[in-house]
Image 1 (cartoon, rainbow, N blue to C red):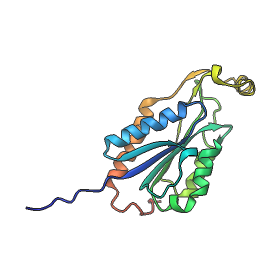
Image 2: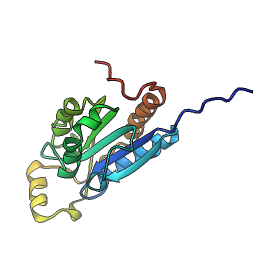
Image 3: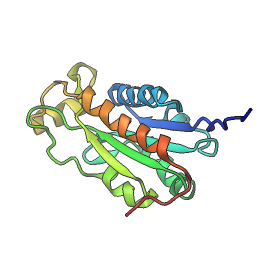
Image 4: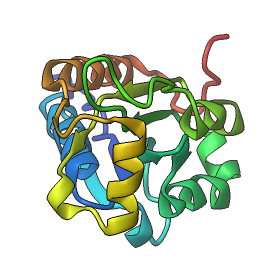
Length: 181
């Protein structure tokens, strides 16, 4: 009677910098999909992450403001560069809203962080803008950008991207392998 060796459950941290909760909902959807792939996916606010050591892989994202990530998500990456570079990492940003998306540029800090941690990918998702939750200054910026109020998140895109990550994680033989370039 052969004992089939069972693959250990991959522990994945999905960390997010979100001010009003819309980007957190994207992170939660990613976590849910990764659980469907048999991962032990844990969704946390970036500011609440005490250590990255217990995790085998990471999905880190942030709301994008003027091309920049929220400070908590950016600091999580910069404070843990060595550990993140040794494991699989995916990054995502959420921010442009409207049709066409405003601001139009979706590159920014998230894309720049790919090289910092040797991330396997960066994905930019459309965001959600609820003007009732914005302070006066934020409302002025939204008017200046002529950004459209509404929920522009494309859940199919979010879940498909998370499935791609799930497929990659379930095929990874050695989690410390460098990504192919």
